[in-house]
Every structure is written in structure tokens, then in C-alpha cells.
Image 1 (cartoon, helix red, strand yellow):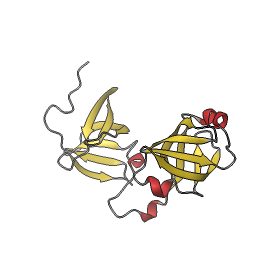
Image 2 (cartoon, helix red, strand yellow):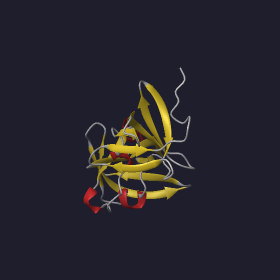
Image 3 (cartoon, helix red, strand yellow):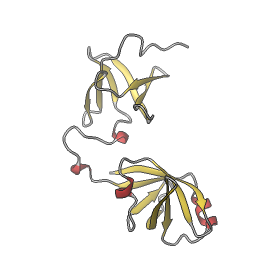
Image 4 (cartoon, helix red, strand yellow):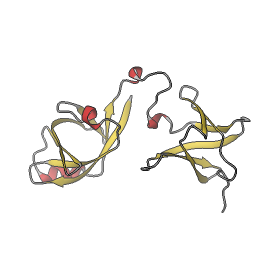
Length: 166
């Protein structure tokens, strides 16, 4: 499965390095030298250098040798092939949650997950509820179960969490 692992940022220096907005739990694994990444456009890039500079990941790609070539790739999402069979039972990637239907414990449909919002304190499920967005904290007190194969998430939200005001 192809999973988004980052976004190409601005060029760093003049030799074709790019800053990377990291969107993966294991950047050292996903961005090691020799790894292949796929851009939104379908273009495949091979990492020729990878280093951290002031807590910012810098990547160099084979065939990309100057700042102008990086700027042409700027803001594109980068994906990596991930072997989901290596996940332990009950583990999942956040991108697998997008499109899941969210239900209350009484089987009442809340809506569909449109995004996972990553925050420093906790992550949130952004759920489209009848055209409005509700945010559900991803904590074990609220998320009762996640069934990736059935694309179903069961929640037990506190009173008022799912209220939508227009």
C-alpha cells in the first residue's frame, strides 16, 4: 500500500536538497538512502542523501541537482510503499482511517472520517457529520473499536462532543 510519508518543502542550498514536512512515525526508516518515493504526479524519486539540520529533514534525490529542480517539486506529497502485513493485530496507519464510517455504540451512524488531525497533545478524527465537521479525540476513553477491514469505528463520546451548531 502507498502511504503518504511527507511533503516536499522549499529548497535548501543550491545543490538540490529539499526540506521535508515529515508525516510518518519512522522517518529514519522511510527516508533512508536508496529508498524510492512516489510524488503526487506519479514521478518516482530515489533518495541519494538524507540528513537532519536543526530538526528539519533534508533530502537529496538522484537526478535532482539544483535548487530550481527542487522548487519545481515543492508542495507535492511524497508516498512510500508500506508492507501492511508487518503490522501487529490491532495496529493501523492513520491513512487507513480515512473513509471509515463512525458509529455510536447503539449503531447510530455519526459520519465518515475525512482526515486525521495530528496535534502535539493528541490526534483527532475529523468526521463529516451531515456536511459539518466534528472532531473526535483519539483516546481510548472515546474510541471503543477500530475495524480497518470493515472500515468501521465505534465511539462513545462524552455528551455534547458531537453537537454541531450552524
